[in-house]
Image (tube, rainbow, N blue to C red; front, top):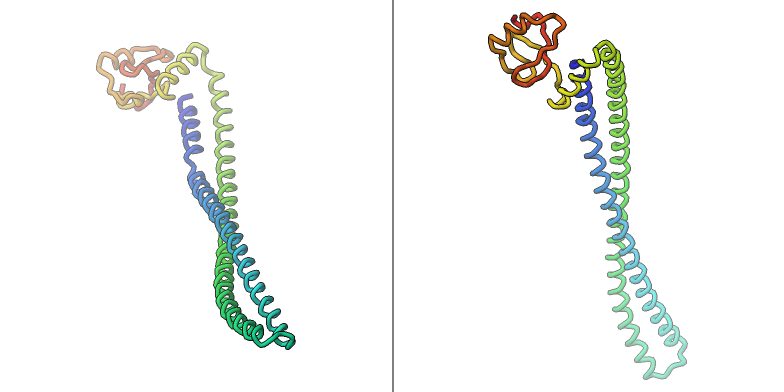
Length: 233
């Protein structure tokens, strides 16, 4: 019984501490970080796209103003004074257009960079997300294997428990609950394997004299002592 319970405890510990859990957690954390990065990158793209629209609008407004002025000037329907004013304004508009086109070009370059960064992050997110799915599948497979072992050991435990008298089984369960899951321990080389304490001579003599089916307890830890060929009696 104790060997089976120890095996169940080992399987439970193994299930909790599977390395696949750490791998999945790391990849899930990376996915979360990348998702945040993608959101920020999309916001940056949206912001720069609005800048591009404003820059294009500003350039277009100057172009239309210059086109209207040039049309009036070319029509010959304005006086000399107005023609001079229009020509001066055309020069000013040309300088303004040149400056705005530089701004437009700079914004469009930032737009291209932002879009490229977003595409790269989205691709990386897809890759890491795929890795996380693989890690999740690996963890599921490992857990399934352990659960299969647990079911087998539990079946063996149930079968074994059926052959133990009720009073002894109740004692074992109580002691096991009081001592961290270890209710029975073998006696090897005169030492209790539960508390690792060597039994004194008086106790050993009592154990030697005890009937084969007697329930023995360790004087130190009160666990049930199981005699073995290596007990040293």
